Length: 285
Ligand code: A3P
Image (cartoon, rainbow, N blue to C red; front, side, top):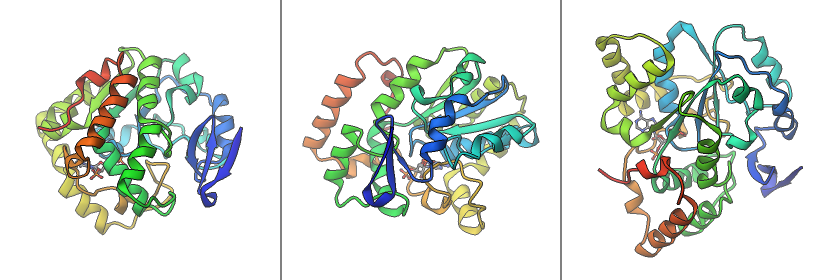
């Protein structure tokens, strides 16, 4: 089911590209994973604000839950490692909804899906491909955009990822959050997350969390810290210094030509025609 290519950095599994940091054996065994009712999934397509959301949730849950590394990160021993954690688990993942261990759905576990407008996501991912040694090199932005639109990138198609999660979830146990809403009014989003998770926090704690998870604060902390590589929230790298680049809404305008924009919109309109979530996307302020 899995084949290796691209200088051995990437292998495909079920038609989706993964880095070698996710072993085929682990991916194959995910189906057997036994979720617990109180597990919370932190779901995203890469470059959508995963680390930002993880930072907020870590502050919100403080000592009440452990943020694990992504379920698809590592080798066969991963599932046992997760099983050994006795407390409440917050589990990040970039998995497509169709690849999620079925026990999460059966046990109606909560999931928070963070979504970012796909044009900024593509630009962010382009830079990530250029900087991240775990990903193959791409020679140019036009070439990368082509790959992105075809879903020929790590974690597969952005469009299919969103659609798969939209299909597999119910309003009750899944919270869709928008990167752009977080940029606009972070405290409102932090309140929303706390209500969803059932964590009670007062205004001053919310204020403190917003301060600690601002772009500048996170960037300066990341530059100072000596990070433990096993404590990653992204299956594509443990190097947190690669994560905070610009943190802007609308950076895509510095990259897309009018022709590329038309091409993007064409694919978007075709793929996302029936998506409710996609209707709420914002591309600039
Ligand atoms: P850019 O490359 O556009 O700067 P992920 O965590 O899913 O890999 O997403 C990374 C993207 O989220 C990067 O986008 C990064 O700068 C942005 N990001 C991370 N923390 C942020 C924050 N506190 N505020 C705004 N953007 C943030």
